[in-house]
Amino acid sequence: MTAAAPDFTIGIEEEYLLVDQDSLALSEAPSEMMEACQSELQNQVTPEFLKCQIEIGTKVCVTVDEGREELKRLRACVSKHAAKYNLAPIAASCHPFSDWRDQSHTEKERYNALSSDLAGVVRRMLICGMHVHVGIERPNQRIDLMNQLCYFLPHLLALSCSSPFWQGRDTGLDSYRLTVFDNLPRTGMPPNMDSFGEYERAVSALTDLGVIEDSSKIWWDLRPSSRFPTIESRICDVQPRLEHTLTLAALTQALTRMLWRLATNNQRWRIYDNFLLSENRWRAQRYATREGLIDFGRHEIVPMEELVEEMIGLVQEDAEFFKSIKEVERSREILNTGTSSARQRQTYLDAIENGYDKDHALQAVVRHLIEEFHTDL
Image (cartoon, rainbow, N blue to C red; front, side, top):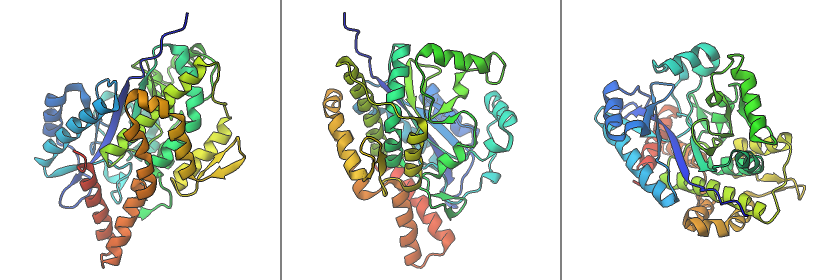
């Protein structure tokens, strides 16, 4: 008897930064604003570690189209209530010029414990990401699909980069967020495991000693969710443009189904050591889509244009199944127009060419991010 196909439902989480509409610097969310958002959205909106951050999460969605309507509603709600306090949300993984030293963390038991446990490292976590959950009911299947999906995490990261600036400087990286995040323990590419039981034993080795209270403190780029029967991709920078969020979610959903489909034909994607995959992760973090990634089967560096076409071809059947062809193919648009990091840099350079000084050019980048946040609403 053939096992039933997984549901492949998706859920999308996004973290936003709040900026003052006059100074364009980071600003803390007033408690009244959070209360208003939560009154309208209930548990779909929560405070984040820092008071200048806010996190939203969609309901369980069968299709990317459902995800679009959810994100429109959630983004619009946050924007509406923020505006009452002269604030605006931006969906970029690092603020272009604000300093982490000027931020304070949210007074909440979980965040107080994080601040105590991780000390100075967590204080620098002025970063935002996006997470995509894919529903996989069978625990061992979650691990098997995770092992294979790791290969594509650098591809997704390359398309998502939105954090070139840090504290007023161009870092030269396209995802500086990961440089900051990787200072935390239990981050990076997940280890290759044989079963869900092996994963549970690894988690128990830490929880039994009281090192962590549960698996939510494991912050790998891809992990079994601690709350839901899903695998959770955490590799991507958050996207200023809603439609680019949906492209990354559609690719994640379709790639997962493609790998499951291989298994139904007694095939699987080749597993590579994390040492090699981490090299591609670094290339994506450093260059986004500009310099290509290593194809370990071909033993060569392949341009992202070719890799994206290969991905689209691999998931064609799956994108058709989910009715997400348009979203998957929009990855070509990201290549053609540039990632958010490329657009932010261009905005900065344009401002400098127009006679702005450095500080005002960085403010122009923030205005650009505010505009992009609202583009698809």
